Length: 477
Image (tube, rainbow, N blue to C red; front, side, top):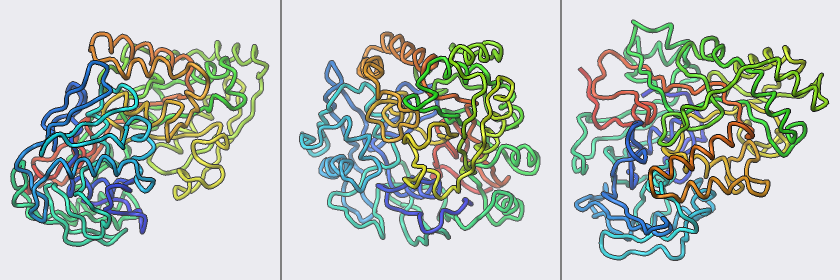
């Protein structure tokens, strides 16, 4: 695997995994309670270290039934003690899962009911709770683990070596509960500093897979290598913080959505590897409102701005080359905004600080207008809304839920266990988000990966790059 480097920030500590090289490694070493699954799977997950989960009537208490016969890399059997320890670790300040998990889990009352049975009480109803457990920072760790220098997991590959920003070497787990991987070893090379070098390395035979490649490079290399392409829930959006002027005025927010010709973004920014956004995050996920369509009407946008007293509006739009398409999306949005009298001045920040607390701090009032991306998402609408679209969300880019009543529909939908009623309630949540929220989703961006012609058994799906970094099924022809 060849990936762009994240330098010394890379880790094999599953609690702190935050970038693609981290995910590529931790997905190979550890297992979740439930795996993310391609679209069409009810709830967006399939069994992992838990074979089943059941809840009470209001989804406030969950019973997890664990898989028998699973062993850790050091030979110890998986037990309920490991899962209780893992879930309680989600409440630790050192875990990147803590902000989300602590908003829904009653940690002190998590307990084992038997050798392979765990009870998880929640602070509020979450009908899609199994999908929350599939999040990267929530993979299961062994009871008592505090040091991740030489990680021990239950995953398909076992740790041998790791140098941040350079490479890692893992070997096949001969006792893996899903069967020994076909591959004898897995090397994750994260020393690349640019995408053309990664694709050239595929052509030269130095690497076999390049997860997550720019759309333009993928299009240019069709016929030279295998290009994996699958629609997924990832997106790039221009974000308005709705509690900061001028976006406190709903007329301005509506205008900023109406001025956008989203089809142009699909063709000019993403080379066709995308679909137009509708300002509802979660394309391909269960209950996503595919019937909601974004309207393009620059004339109406101009009229709304005039009514709001903003005929000639000037403001700064922050962006960064963190992923392909972010800077280009900001630039194209600014160009289209000119047609309705809006001057958006583009300001690029370095990738190293864009999602940090450095001024102007991410997800704060210091960034009223910015471009952001999600290409790794929880496999349910509930998971994403807990991450980004409620008053307690750790990545609340748009300040949604900070005003009274904005979370009411969401909490009701999240707790609904009847699928038909849940579909209706989630649709209402998304109608409100499309009409009043701060996301302007320019496009739902496909997962795009590059493969050598030798690679077999690994594919790109709506679950993520390389089917969410699933390599145990792969081999080389």
